[in-house]
Image (cartoon, rainbow, N blue to C red; front, top):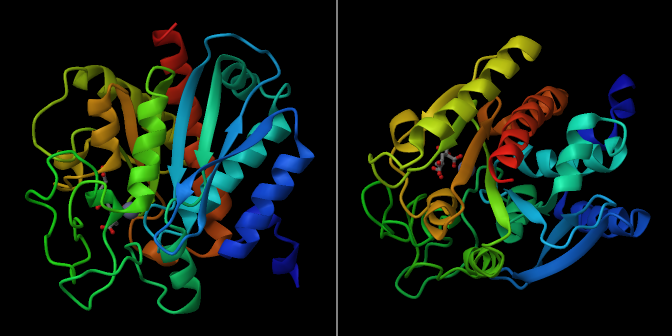
Length: 312
Ligand code: PAY
Ligand code: ZN
């Protein structure tokens, strides 16, 4: 069966597989990978971050943050985080871009920000989006983690009803997954220069704000970065990505991690919506993983290398 010859990274993996992979990856690359426990989920699963570093040690190192799997059903997102880590480890000192990135910045990768939801999409409901927290007022389960951050929290574009897909939660950072990420970024805000959140679907490269129609102070600069990245994707992969400020490009989405990180002071903050444009949507077949990840990787490298120049 030719399909079984697809590599590990061209398949989707269960949560247990991903935990195993995190452990094994760290063990096989002790010089470049450290595992950091940043908190745990509502159902008490660990939230592990992989810290990737080049072998050049520098005192005051800048950093990139990448999170995947904030929404459970967006399976291509954790697949990208795994892809990215593997690519970084394999091509460090072979590919110039990744070598420069890892020599200038540490890269923090959270492969599955919403492990309870992800698990649930494998066992019970493939289309689940939220986490799995129980609410006091209702029998409905789950908060939208991308509505739970403190950025115009629970205004238009979010819901205060626990049964809704975009339920904002009881209060900002009420969810342990959002709180863990926010705490980590708060304590690393001086070093983290670039924030990136990976979602699907829609093929878009987005930047703040999601929570209002206002333009951020460096709108023009962020626009140039995503425009260049989208152009590279078009050239290399003949695929079109939309780009722009989130609220205007997709819709109002208050309480998102990207806006919150921006307001914390991480002024290079992006959300990528990976493939596709809706044909398969969240159910992107495994045969599309490599193209989707290569596109996102190209955009990520393009933006990161610019940010390295800009924050020198
Ligand atoms: O900039 O925060 C942003 C993107 C907003 C995303 C959201 O949280 O609603 C966009 C959606 C997502 O990836 O979750 C888009 C997908 C297709 C959806 O479920 O609507
Ligand atoms: Zn999403």
